[in-house]
Length: 119
Figure 1 (cartoon, helix red, strand yellow):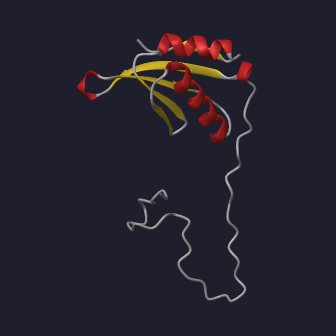
Figure 2: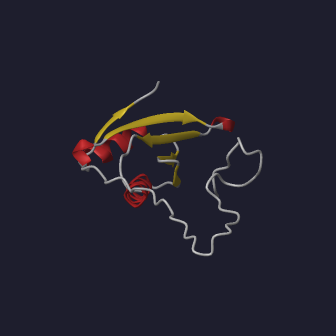
Figure 3: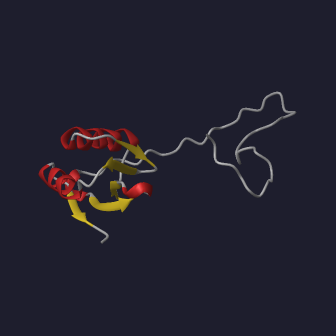
């Protein structure tokens, strides 16, 4: 999905090229610069505990600086170690259930700087 530009009033993304009359036109796609993943001992991760609708609990890890692939690998590790489901979305790792203490312990053993945050 592309991000829509509210200023245009249309459903088109901001960088969409609709038409060019120049036969030699070549669009230069701006590639997102992939953030280099910081070493685990340089990461400042925070683990939150959120309540979803229906009283369900969710453990949320944010503050990861690096590539999406590395974040997904860390999310997979946490899901396996906790034995629950979860997802990686919007630069955060979401783990089903109340596993904040266990997640902080796993991250600390893996060399990350992690701490509990929130209430």
